[in-house]
Every structure is written in C-alpha cells, then in structure tokens.
Image (tube, rainbow, N blue to C red):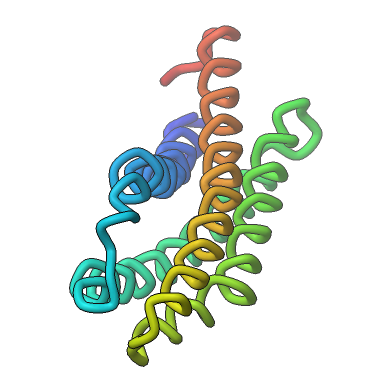
Length: 159
C-alpha cells in the first residue's frame, strides 16, 4: 500500500498546525508589543477587521484539522505514533473551546465599539492573556506534528 495518502494527510495537518503556530507567534512577537499605542480611537481598525477575517478562515481550517487528525488516528491505530493525532485533537479542541467560550465574547465586545479607555485596557489585557494560552496550545499541536515527521524519517518511511 502506498504511504502517500498518509503522508499527504499528515502534511495537510502540519500545514494547518503551522498556520495557527505562525499566526499565534506573529501576534505575540509583533502585535502584543504595540499594545501601549492602542487607544479607543484606533483599536477598531487595528483589531476588528483582521480578527473577523481570521475567525472566518480559522473556523473552516479547524474543521479540516479535526477531520485530518481523525484520519491520522485511524492510520496510526496500534502504533506508538497514535499519540500524535490524539495530542493534536486534544489541543485543537482545547484551543477551540477557549476561543468560543472566552475569546469570541471579547471579540464581539470590541466589534460593538468601546469608548471607555479603562474598559478597552481590561478587555485587551484579558484577550492577550487568553491568546498566550492559545499560542501555547497551537505550539503543542505544531510540536506533535514535528515529532510525527521526525519519527517517520528515522524509521526510513517514504516521504
């Protein structure tokens, strides 16, 4: 049986994990440091359109990730590498739950318009803290997939 369907599925899952990983670390390294310059007068343009577009894109990508990880569970069933798609599924589920329960309500509040600087500061503080947790979860997903590729390369799997 050809290894290519398994490899292509893993590559798709790794691509999705990499999208989250890169988006998260980009926020952490480049967007969070400019927080002191964000005000009630400029936050909407800096935040709302980008987050709205990202939410739409990542909603669909998360569905693809879940399906891809589930397929990977099937192909790795009975092997030590079964842990990889399980870790990815758990981290995706946790990040999605965090997003839906905690982060999306903050996004909605910012989309509705904030005029009070103190309220904006509190919401941005909470949003940034929650996103650091999410960045951690996205990093776990990415690291799990790297482990899979390294393990396959070490046993001489056709890649």
